Length: 472
Ligand SMILES: Cc1ncc(COP(=O)(O)O)c(C=O)c1O
Image (tube, rainbow, N blue to C red; front, side):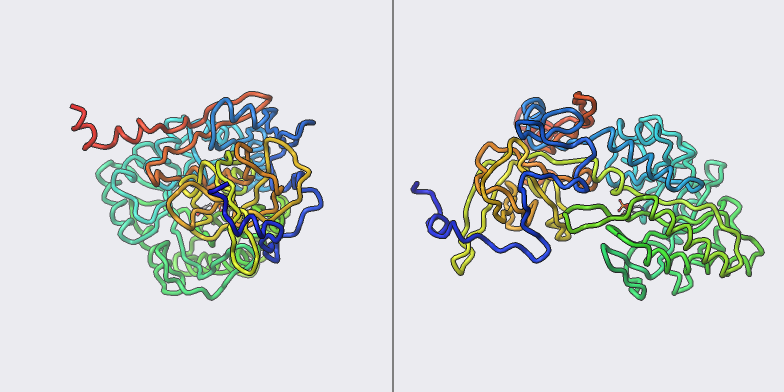
């Protein structure tokens, strides 16, 4: 008892208020379907199961923390996007999460792949992904990256700067080849969640500015280059977008470029890529539109804008990442410490420390992303109280779930599952505090398969030349 937080024990009945958007659940054990992958449910004894695997068993088998990907759910979402956008090309955005097995799923489900680094390209190629169906991004692609892309016949390189045009031309000349390119443009549209700003100024590192005229100059330069084959224009406007308003403005501005290019050259460009950024539900508050509704909206927009400019509708591509892998994944943690913290005014906040943290999910610390959580190893009849799920790292901002109603009796040893953790968690994970990164496992039909094994301390120590020297 000596370590118990005194204020916590005195005021434990007055818990921190919920933020306005977080409503008190009628049943704290209920799982809101839009947050979870499609096979998630509670077994009769209350344990959460995914892909036919009980999370208690999974924790025994692979340990915690761990990322769990529901293979059927991932494949179904990939198919949904492909079907909804029939006639368009869907590039899965590998930055959201990529490994060998997942690259093969993407391939088998008939999607193309967008990569943006030497590492992502190498994973895709080693997984046997057809290079012709790969798009290569990056605002500062190295010669090594471009060389590999050219040598392996990557389908399109999305060019981000005039420096890159020069680099690419020189490499093509050296290799005696040509490159299919798209020009990435900055439309001045910046979209996040429920809002978009159509007048956002273009003070950022990506792309060629439309406003500043660099976009058209870049397009002409590619068009006149004997080494480059200009396919079209690429625009990506943001992330976690729930409506099509931002895409409408971006499509108008990019298609105006198509029309200006035609005026100058007599040629209509073949392709427009509208990028990714389609939102998912991280909390009950988020209400993403289904892929088919988005597809209808985007098709109408493109057709309307093409009519307005008297253009034939070009081939269109999109690059969803999060919308496919995000909801298919969950992160599983074990509670190690429960601490009621007096936050003033007689109010107590319940801090649940788990065995992961900002090293396996940086998004809450990086841009205040909200998540949800559920008690995974059992149900509870205790009162729902606003709780904060925090990690093990030496940062006050090491928060995984800022506010969530969880049962008041969550205790040491319980498992917590954080849904919608498939995208930008493992792919942005770090080794902060010399923490090995968790494994990624897939589940399907009651079977657990390792996609990425758990990193070990030995993996990390093996990088340390100073320690290796000591051992000799
Ligand atoms: C060019 C481009 N395409 C696609 C994506 C994927 O975005 P999301 O995973 O939000 O769909 C991103 C994300 O940053 C991006 O920069």
